[in-house]
Amino acid sequence: MFTVISFLLATALVVLCTLDLAISWPWRHARPVFDWTYLGVGITMLWLTYDVFKDQSRR
Image (cartoon, rainbow, N blue to C red; front, side):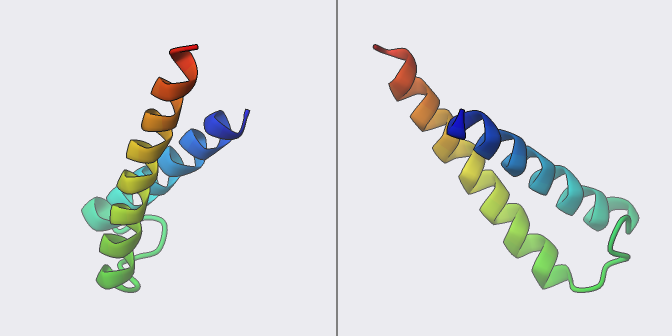
């Protein structure tokens, strides 16, 4: 369950930061450094949750 929640949170973070960088929605380019940092965090979270999912599905 935790893996699914983490995956959904990471996906939402990546989508929101990408939308803000591309079309200035929802934060209107408040801070590009914020967007790039959290985009990197979201991508890292996606990679880690995929890795955990892969380990859990081996059993």
